[in-house]
Image 1 (cartoon, rainbow, N blue to C red):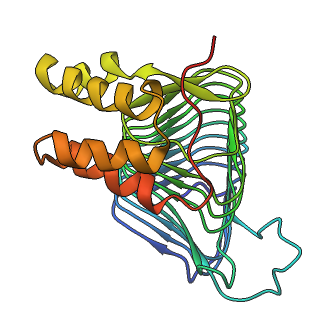
Image 2 (spheres, helix red, strand yellow; image 1 turned 30 degrees about the vertical axis):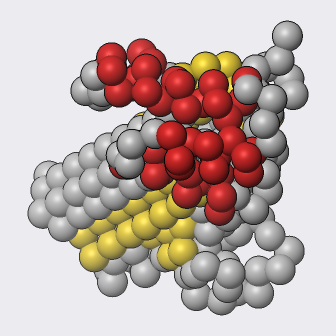
Length: 260
């Protein structure tokens, strides 16, 4: 597929096979774009961008823009996008800083219109950021997580896998895997059972996860006591170990339990 004559593509940019660059796009020198990726009219792919195969970039999107961080001093860094990821209109992805050196967005993700991924973030595979949701610097998001429209995530927050946020959520604490999160202040709203079923989790496994979160949030124990109880009273499974490791390693503290 062609590079349009009205596109501004640096001759040193590395384009894979069957890449489409539409009119009025800009692609800078230190850019690599994988096979079969389509960059639509008006998108801007800046130095440090690494796009995988079969990506789709919509008009107005900016990938690998300079970080919006006053500590950034022009150091070399990257913004790396996996395969099969769609970046919709006016979404922005900043490249990294000296802190991590790169921003990562995984494969099979959907970043809807006006979303923002800040410097040094890590977004896992199969994630969805709904319109106008934004994540600040050095946020980590696990696979299969969905940020509802307008969700705002504070810098350094860690979010586990298979989490679903209600629209408009303000996220300032870590959010453990497999849960629904919403309300103000943000709190645990149950297990993401619909999402887990869609991804092949059995009812028995979902019930087991739910029981562990009842222990964590609803039994009157502090989090250290609850995690020790879960470790002693539930059989070792990947899901149990994931919950235990997440809570124990949290730097910001996790969200609160279900509130009235």
